[in-house]
Image 1 (cartoon, helix red, strand yellow):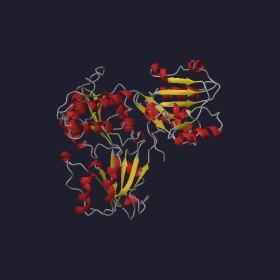
Image 2 (tube, one colour; image 1 turned 180 degrees about the vertical axis):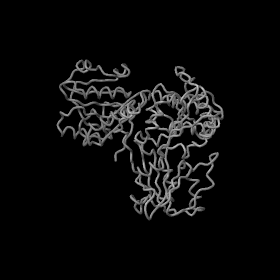
Image 3 (cartoon, one colour; image 1 turned 90 degrees about the vertical axis):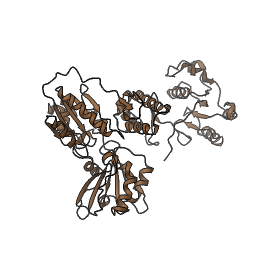
Image 4 (cartoon, rainbow, N blue to C red; image 1 turned 45 degrees about the vertical axis):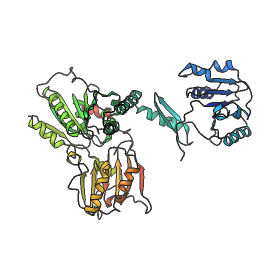
Length: 516
């Protein structure tokens, strides 16, 4: 596997070697690419083209036209000594980087240039020849400070371009604003000496992981105290005034499933389309939020470390005020409302205020994740029980009732990955769980970037530390994890990218038409 890296070519002296008789698109692209990278100078060597011929074709997107002054055009044949004489004084006149632009050179000449570049440790890229290149250019997408590069490692440049187009479609149009805003937030936190920086950066990390991507550009810091309320989301100042008030509002607790549109129930989709206000969990994925009509108000729960109870109270207050104004409120929850979703508490809250609560079930992540990971939660002779646990109790503490080991039970832990270092000693030392028990971490269940990590219980904490998490995730434990797929004896862990198709076959327009 090759290393993908971003090259900093600022202040470099770069040679473009060409012998074409006409100004090619490839030549123009390379001039544009290298000049826009803020080099010391770009030297184009071509014996057949005059400076005026080349400059007349330069109607490209150089960001700063002053960069043109860094372009030097030499109307001559390339000589090997050019590699050693045209560079910067800092590197004893040796050129920093070479591009062979044309495919018209004889192979013997290309080999000579390539070998001399190797001897002098000069990176070289040869047009249409990986054999004589020490670096290759990727199919790229640029938007402000965002750069994305894709390669199929020479197994089809057309496929790279196609994959790039597919990725670009999923990127919010305000992505550069998002990147700049998050960067500014981080700088604000770091520049304030009074703040508890560690906690604030932890909260910011949570926001980046969970908050809808196209909303990250709207986050601001209103004031910097010692409370998470420092992080204030720019939500609408008031509910949509164009909605006619009704005498009696409605409240629905709606499960949205684990993430995939195909796992969203018809009832949930109908509720989303009929809502005036949607109060959504931070875990509800972007694909689901994108289904919400633009005229519907959205508020995302601010449930981050240390603020869960306050955020829950805030959500209930907003919902109650909206119902009292006669609005149709949907409390959109990831998974199922009644499986570690505080749905029961919310039901009682609104019921105690005199409102009938409509509850719509959702597919819960423990059941979807195990299916997608190839784990039969029950299997004759292996597992005849299922248990769903949480790794976070009241006030963020480890639950006191972690289960004793039962060999024929599949136990699924939610909200536990970041607490596994504290949970494991209790399971192994106090609850008699075997360290060789197979386990699987399932992240982003049913989403396009779903991932499964298989390991053993005793290695679980180390594996979690080695691999950057992809939240949200859950942990499946039990011998059922080994029914279809087993680790080799010498295998510490295995990562399986199981990303699910982004619902290409789901015809939402047809479904919505049927609902109407």
